[in-house]
Amino acid sequence: MTSPLKINQPRLIARLDELARVGALDGGGVTRLTFTDADKEGRDLLVRWMRELGLAVQIDRVGNIFGTRIGETDDAPVMFGSHIDTVKSAGTLDGCYGVLAALECVHTLTEQNIQTRRPLVVAAFTNEEGVRFTPGMLGSAVYIGELSVEQAWDLRGFDGTRFGGEIQRVGYDGTMEPGAIEPCAYLELHIEQGPLLDLNRVPIGAVDAVVGITWLEITVNGAANHAGTTPMDMRRDAGLAAAKIVTYLREIATTLGGNQRATCGMIQFLPNAINVIPSKAIFTVDLRNSDNDALQKAEAMLVEFVKKIETEDGVSVEVRALEHVLPVQFHPMAIQAVEESAQKLGLQFQRMVSGAGHDAQLMAHKFPSAMIFVPSREGISHSPKEYTPPEDLARGADVLLNAIVDLAN
Ligand code: HGY
Ligand code: MN
Ligand code: MN
View 1 (cartoon, rainbow, N blue to C red):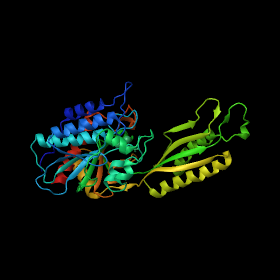
View 2: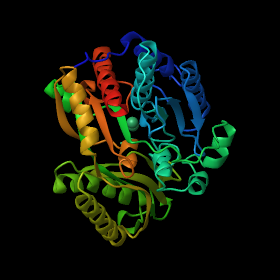
View 3: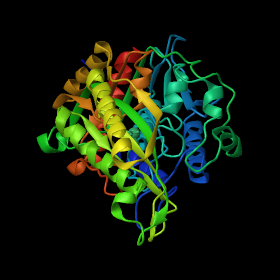
C-alpha cells in the first residue's frame, strides 16, 4: 500500500489569499457576482494559474472553465472543481476552496511527476450562486442539458442586465459545447457551510445527499395611500401582506420540521417612502428539503397562505418560480472513493446531507458524483466571518487528491 499523497498547504493558502483579494470589500468580505469586472478578474487569475500548470484550458458557451491534465490514456477523465463566483459580501472559501484545492492537487501531481491513467479536469462552473442571474447552479445545469445555452443567454439579472450581453462584455463566451467533456466521475470539495463537523470535531464529511431547492419571487400588489389619513380598515397594504407571508415562512419550517428550511433574503417596497402605504412589495423565498415530497408540501402551504392573504388584505399576489432543483443521492462508487481516501489518510469522517446547493447535485444527474466537506467554524458561511483553519483546508485537499488518483487509476 503506497503512502498517501499530501498537497502543499502554504501554496494552497497563498492562492486562496490571492483570489480573496479580487473583489475584496473595505469592511471585509468579497463580492464577485457573475460576469462583473471582479468575476472577470478572478476568472483571468484562475485561467493564468491553469496555464502556468500546463493545463489545456477550455471555456464553454456559458463561461464554464475547464483545465485538463493529460493522462496515460484518453479514457473518460475524472473531473473535480466547484465555482469561484460569490454571493454579496461573501467569505473567501465558498466555491473557491474547491477550485483552488483541485488546482493544488494537479500542482502536487505534476511536482511529484505522477501520471494518472485517466486525464484529470479541473472545473469552475458559471453562476453557481445565482445572486445576479437566477437560477443558481446555472453553469452545471446547462452542462447536463437541463437549461439550454439560449435560455441562459436570455436571462435577465436582478440588476436588469442580460446574461448574453454580460458574458460577451467580459469575454468568457467560449466556443466549447457545454457537456462536451463526459467525466467518469465528478468530485466537489467544499466547506460545509453548516455547524455539524465543527460541533462533532470531525475533520471530513462524506456527503451522500444534497437538499432540493425552490426559489420563488413573490409580488404583492396593493394600493398606495396616505399613511396618516387612510383609516386602518380601508387599506390595501402590500407591505403588511408581505410581512405576514414572510412571517409564515417560519411557520412552514417549524410545521414540517426535519431539515426543512425557509428564508426570505431580499425584499423591496414601492414607492418605498416613509409616509406612503406600499402599493407593491417584491420579495424572494428560498425553500429547501432533502425530501422532495416535503419540499412540494412546503410550496403548497405557501401558495395556500398567499390565497388567504389576498382575501384578508385585499391585495393580489403573483408567485414566480425562479429555480427548482431536485434533491439528489450521490453515487456509492464516488462516495466510496472519498471514504477510502479519508481512511488511507487516517482521517475520521462522517456521512452527511448538504443543506447548501452545489454544482455536484446537477452533475449527479448524469455522472457518478460525490462531495467532500471540511468544517466551517461555527457553521458560518455566506458571510465575511466564514472561516476554516488552514490545516482543515489541507486535510480536505489531501482527501480530494487521493480520491481522484484512485478514481483516475
Ligand atoms: O444557495 C446555495 O445553497 C449555494 O450556496 N449556492
Ligand atoms: Mn458553493
Ligand atoms: Mn454559496
